[in-house]
Image 1 (cartoon, rainbow, N blue to C red):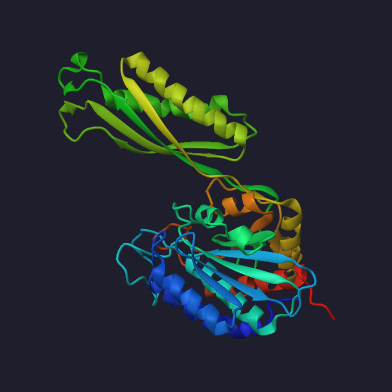
Image 2 (cartoon, rainbow, N blue to C red):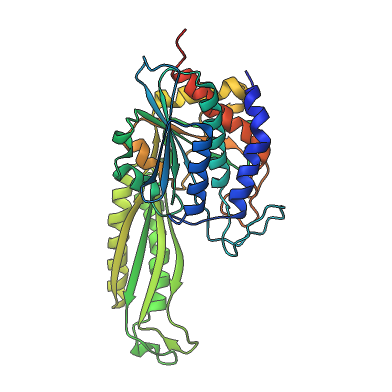
Length: 390
């Protein structure tokens, strides 16, 4: 069965919500306007319970089915925050706020879940309860963790939880998913190297922190190529180097910033340990001192195998089995929906977004043609997981 007819009728309205969110992007936990509109819409739809301020600025809506003999409670999550990026896309609803844009499609995720909320509140053709989770601060703030720590899962009785993200490069009208690790743990590190500054013309009188930094950067790549199992994934990227600001001064200190991405706990532990050992060893070889501050960020996003198959089957009902990839390779990007999946079994699925620039690109564009597929997925998931009683 393709897109639900009622959902197709709602598409223009859902697109208008998305365009409004897109014009007015908000960052991290500062999503007060977006959260306020979400709460207003949920009230307008006749949602049974609305809670605000969950995980600081998150919103939760509860819709009860026509009956509740099943006792099931399913959570569905959308993220609301934007990115600190200057928009380059030429769209009529482009961002009105300089330096901020919805470059990852969270405006669409929010609009899609609102569309599902309107449909489910109208029809209530299910036996159980659906919990709609609108989350702040996915882009580095750990809003998913904050909502879980705020007791959301227990407070609303969530038993299983599902999330969706658009995927540029996959055709509109398609889905992609995999069981097990879906997205990587996302850690960050800061390396401070202390040497001996001095005149660039007399390097023998210094301990050159720029030279030490260059060797540290090179040596860190040996962790991935020589310490990690070749059949297991790891990425270590140094993305910033600051070492002085004059052409003729060897700096006293240098700082490196980077990220480490892994899919398995033992690889994550190994990378953290080896980064510190490599920095200590290289610095010692040059007579410098090194300090590593390693921060563990979002954990691995792990899909429950049964829930993965379930949502893949729902997607196949909408677009056809040939348009649902169920064995895509894991991505090394991070996702804080992982905290919710650590708290409850569930699955995270990708929605095709066609030929767009990648997420986090200033010219990224979400294709509104994908909206009804996302709304239909959530509507059908609820109706299939908690079928209405005769």
